[in-house]
Length: 169
Image 1 (cartoon, helix red, strand yellow):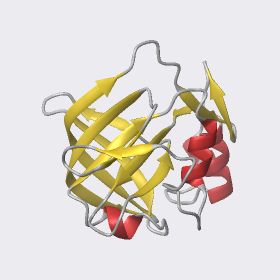
Image 2 (cartoon, one colour):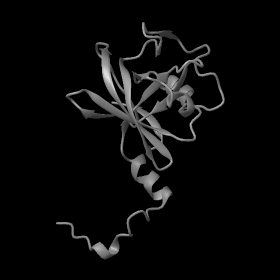
Image 3 (cartoon, rainbow, N blue to C red):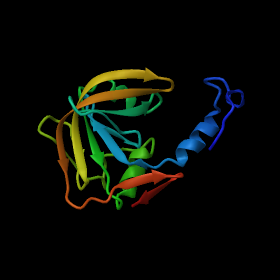
Image 4 (tube, rainbow, N blue to C red):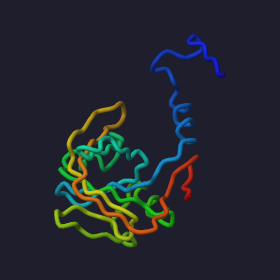
């Protein structure tokens, strides 16, 4: 049995950023690309923070850094799309994680959904979301959104991020 003395723990809020990052590098996360268009053209970013929040109503959440170039657009978006990536789509994940480029330029294949949202082609699944709440959280925002449409391909192999690299099951 593991015994931990409370006096050996630092005070709340005292964990160093490098230690925090190290802990979460060992925790695998599914890789998605979040896309939106608030009227100034399509934007998107790679995320590993997608979480199911509620079944009824169906709600999900994800985080976005305040410093992200996508944040000013996402902040004004009424809807977004979560694109689930396949294990073979590491290049797409890297593209949407790269700053200073047109992420929707060739070779990215994408289309618009009937509501105007940008959606990536060839993904293993997709959620169309209505943004419900934006919650400031440290150096990020947490987006809480209601699932209004869902689609999933057959035989999907998810792309994962673990220990600083992309992986598959």
